[in-house]
Structures are given as structure tokens and as C-alpha cells.
Picture 1 (cartoon, protein in one colour):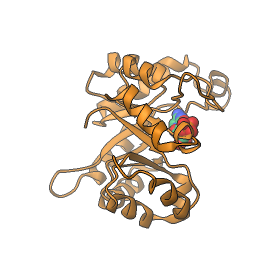
Picture 2: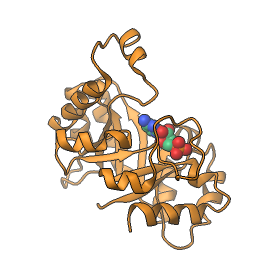
Picture 3: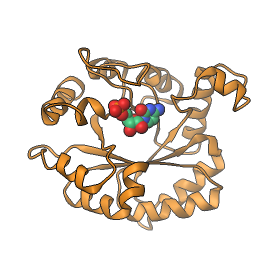
Length: 232
Ligand code: C5P
């Protein structure tokens, strides 16, 4: 898969999601389904969005004992999503088990990427809450290398980290980056942001864009602007 823009469909119902997606009569965007929508509507929403011709990143961030994650991944694999994810903090063994669960009898599987450290975790929380006394960027790179060593396809990271992740883990190791804003847009609660054009320059493989598209007066135009800056 090449570079693409993934729209974060952070809605709490199928109705709102389809009202939004129905606007896209041309190119069918790659969409991210997160916990909110999945817990509200269940696997049926994944099947329906797939049936409508969208690629899907199912962002459920699994983190449990290896056997449980393996079995859960086998179920997600049957939903025929394109990308799913987990927390690298679950250990290499958990990530390897996840890959086993995800792999179908014919050897095919969705891409699997890892969350390293959530961008909501700062250095202080890392040290005080998690008791990890290392600089954040070193922790992120260590987790990214663990994910690569376990056989995963990439990580979710800040666009500011994408270049370093590629240096540490190889050019083919995917970087999927939220925290994207237009130069003339509102950053909202995102602290460290980049424009789609900057994310492209630094080497992000996929950008995940929510409110700059979902809350835009013309979401299709905002999506096309992202594609023009990031992909074309
Ligand atoms: O609306 P906005 O563009 O900020 O949406 C970004 C999306 O990416 C949201 O679904 C958010 O949960 C997700 N995300 C993030 N930062 C991370 C991981 C995921 O913003 N580190």
C-alpha cells in the first residue's frame, strides 16, 4: 500500500458515520474506526463500511495476555480490515502472538502496527506513573524496534517522530501519524502538529486526520486538500 490519508471517523453512531461518508461520492476514503464507534455499533459497522468500498484501519489498541490477544486478532482478521493495532507495551511475545492470530490459513493478514507511547503521555507521567526513567524519544524508539523485531509492519507515532522511526527501523517500516493540521487551521487539543505537506516531507506513510476533515464546512474539499498536499 502506498501513501494515503486516513479519516478518523470519531462518531458515536452508525447514522452519523454514514451521513458523513455519504458525502464522498467520488474517491472512497480510507477510514479509521476507533473504540467509540466500534463499541457503539459492533462488528456490523466494520462490515458495512467495508461493503461500501472503504479500506479500514481498526484502531482498537489491544493489550492483554498473549493468548487473549491472539484469539481476539483471529476474530478481527475475519472482519477483513486492512490495518489493526495493539500496544507495544504488551511485550514482544504478545505482538508475536497477535501476528499468529491475525494470519489467515492462506497466509494473508491485515497490516499490524503498534502504539509505542501514547502522545497523551508526557515525560513526567512516563517517570511518575509508569516508572520508566528514560527520555521519551528513546522509549518510543525502543518500543518501535521491539515491534519491528516481533515482525509487525509499523507504528503509530507523531509525524515529528516518523523520520527517526524510519532511521531506527528501516524505510519499509510503516509510520502512521495523527496530529495533522492545515497551516491555516485550528490545532484544537493536539499539541505537536504538522501539515500534510510537512508530514509527507518527513516520510509519514499514512496520515490520520479527524476534525480538520470531519468538522470542516466542506469535508470532501478538506479531504481532497489533504490528499493533494500529502499524496499527489
Ligand atoms: O481530530 P484529530 O485529527 O485530532 O484526530 C486524530 C485521531 O487520531 C483521533 O482518532 C485520535 O484518537 C487519534 N490518535 C491521536 N494521537 C495518537 C493516537 C491516536 O490523535 N497518539
